[in-house]
Image (spheres, helix red, strand yellow):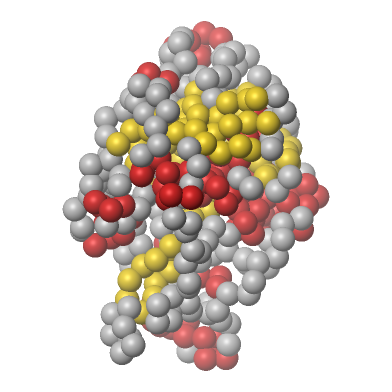
Length: 373
């Protein structure tokens, strides 16, 4: 199956819901410096058998090399001219893409996809199947009034939405190909004083409509049908209309968090393992946790977490990176998803695989609770 051309993408998405290409042509100031709390990788979650090497891939052509679900991607694989059959999968409110091609074949196409959108790939980890873009402004949200259309375009840099977006793509190998997930994270700039002489960046909720938009465009990029791509956007619940600029004193009211004393030591999820695994993975992605590895066969996500009481900000620490604050030393945890019949249990474990219920573990579960209801 051949790729859909750029003209097809442009014609289909004439509504211009996203425009990061214009932002990429502005002066470079939206990128966030490298993570100050990066740890050395923990390789204990690697599936035995290792990565597929370039020589092994060449020897196996034209057929793609077989690999067990969860195996690491090879960073030096060669992209084919098509991703094979690509389709949308859904379970409840979750949406993702499934392709017949292997993760090694999909990975270079994902990198090209984000670059074509005007976004820079700043985290490229094929060994764990995680790719992240830089923080960028969606210029499509700027008001298209008379002043903007006539004069504003001459001084485009003077206009700002006061919002920044970034996307994480997570790739998982399945028995029949590759599952591809896209999650969105957002920040907004808010005034920190009544005099409006200073601002800071704060979290804003993930936007399902932006996730759907990118999934639909990626479906076309990988050779999917336009009708299927249109259905992704059409089936996504509409979001409240956003203001041209979210700058306001105090910003958006944060969702209140329950006291840690009310957070249980484990979460009971009314889903079987497959859906619970997907929901936990998407929730961790949307909250920006740094996932160092994962082992689907064992039901484990390997992540690191910095105590917000010591760090001054909670994971993912992009505020510290923006303003140069000293980061707290992160601790490695494992989020366990264990099937129990047609239900699942989610727990936080320490590096040794023992259940823990300290404040950090409670904070992690607290963030997951609302998403797993």
